[in-house]
Amino acid sequence: MESLTILVVDDDPVIRRLLQQRLKNEHYSVMVANDGYQAERLLKKQHFDVVLTDLVMPGDIGGIEVLEITKELSPDTEVVLITAHSSVDTAVAAMKKGAADYLEKPINFDELFLRMDKIANLKSILKSAKDIGQAMSITEAEAASTIQNLEMTVAKLQTRLDEVETALRDRTKAEDERIANAIDILTGE
Amino acid sequence: MIKISPDELKVVAQYIHDISGIHLDQSKSYLFETRLSSIAEASGCSSYRELQQKAKQDPAKKLERAIIDAITTNETLFFRDKGPFELLQHKLLPEMIDARTPKSGMMKTNIRIWSAAASTGQELYSIAIIIKELLRDLSKYNISLLGTDISDAAIAQASYGKYNKFEIERGLDRAVLQKYFSLFGDSWKIKDEIRSMVNFRKLNLMQPFTALGKFDIIFCRNVAIYFTLQDRTKLFNKIADSLADDGYLVIGSTESLTGVCSRFVPKRHLRAIFYQKS
Image (cartoon, rainbow over all chains, first blue to last red; front, side):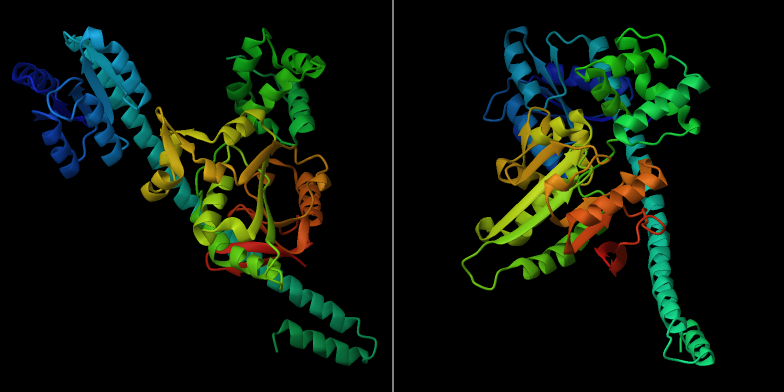
């Protein structure tokens, strides 16, 4: 399984460093942003599997805004919010806006790794499903083209057979003339 | 998972055919097991025979509906297979609009389109989006879009028009998504301007459907593949009766009407085939 790319967004330098270090130790690929503005710039430049953001940050871009920006720029990126116990209601509201999950402070790292693991599993299942879907589309397109060619060929032959039948049943002409006409139709003359 | 015995397979297959027209042969025992086992367990049945008897005796048909929902394949996506939608946009719709536009400018253009195996609605909404994109101002048109399916669960989802992010990511590009859907929690919901263009209702294609009236364009994709040859012939004959004389029929891209119904002739347009009555 490929390792997740994670963007950590937190204005607190101590928590930021701690998250970065612990996630790196678990072999995740991590980048950090000091605030929402920097997060937005990074999100515009590259794709992340997960954005792990503090809910409350100074400035106009808080965790909810980071969530909205992320979903706008890259809908398949999962957003996990870090929140104080007192703002759990806000976090639940954020889940309704498309956040994957939230973690309460102080951060329990086992819990964090578990959540990241779950997201990684989901991403890998989705990727397999997408691969299967693509393989199916290719097979289907190939089969469709074969079937459609056959369908048109059969229709053309049917028309010609109908013409042959009409020619053979044409009572206004002598038998050998009817046969000659039928042969002309069959040989495409 | 409850195992199915060969005897049960026969009886249950016949029952499923009776209620849905779907033909499952002996080789598909895994389908019965994977799709019906949980229903059997949930309704306290220890065998499929018991489930079938219970379903048959239930006057409210709740179990029957659950079995139909489970056994039908709702594999569908927005703009599944680009061919038919390009065909609709560039050929069928423009030609049908030409044919149906009244000579005097006062009357509206009437067009009726039917998605006969609508599943969870993606095909019909894709058609509605194409119409909206192509015509913009719909006030001069009277376009009726009907979607039918045998599964209550599928029709319920189609009517609600809400799709989770996995369903939505498949086949829809960002611009269309942003324009015609609104984010609804973790899911996307079709906007009212498109929702109001379509209607969904339950229909078993094995039953008569002349009451639906005549249609100008019929999509009947990837459903007849689950029927026996005999049932396919019956279905496409009924569809021929329901199609306007100059109407268009679109079937699944890997389906064929050769040896099924001689009332249609295939016509090719670019990468797609459509049928007209002969």
